[in-house]
Image (cartoon, rainbow, N blue to C red; front, side, top):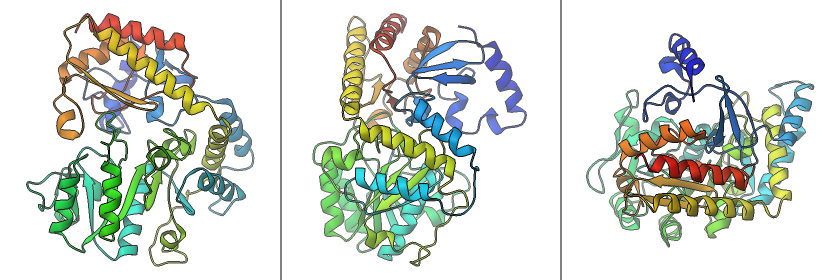
Length: 428
């Protein structure tokens, strides 16, 4: 496949946009080469500016669970647009989607909509600090909660060492209130809590990690976090920006039967438009302005176009009792196909999967946290990525990202993908 038009467009973009992109992973820095510029998408397919068709396995990083340009969502946005695009005033739509979301997700009573997953996680942390009157939080290495200052922290040494910024512009003062733990390591979390008694407001976690590849929680990990939080009056925050309404109607809380105190959402809840949300029981949510002391606001929060898209998406998910079984079956089929495609090679690999999230790691050891994910052979991944691109299959341009499966994929698409992987694996 040729990508001359994309190369030209990228050169033009670099002149007026930092790095030529409006989100860093799009720049292909992890894999090399020139990013693909998309012209349109439909169902399971992307169509780029050079006229190539690609089977899509990132699906806008998760929200296109029913496929691109899903007709009920498109129609809802078009019809709503005719009535006005933004008011900065309440609409009945906001209450309608809030009521539906609360009915689908266990253990939440009130929800507030924002404009992105980053904003949802940032607001959830502020709310947790205000509610508990404590300053510190625990996050996990390799879990990404957006680009808010509190989350751009790398590891220190030792269980009680404060985090240090890993982006210029994040102050040491901000970093000192973020403690970094190892994912899937309850003992490490316990050490951090013991070293900072009565100081930790919240533990925030991707309950199924998706930003170091797909990494499932070990048996007992989420349950252990819940117990530690309850015993120490710490709020447990599930970042379900990726997993919410994707792994089950009620997300990870439903899938694993573990209750969080605050849950953040994004991706699917917006049907492809910029939406985020955070939710909790009423006691916590009522700490928010205008009825509580914790301030949070947004001029475009609850934007009618975003609410219309999200409502159409959630209605479709809620009414389809077989959706998650189909997604599970298709992703399991792909997983088995990849294993078979690699079986005749000398490649070292591990495949992780939960529901419709899956990732391939080029290392034979179990991948259970950021440290083990980092052991993967990135040179092999780069060749794998570009090989698949030439075959007409688009996966995330980073070894540290999960793939997202859409219900729009047919088994013919999956067979095509598996055959492409078989062809590429022979060249690695």
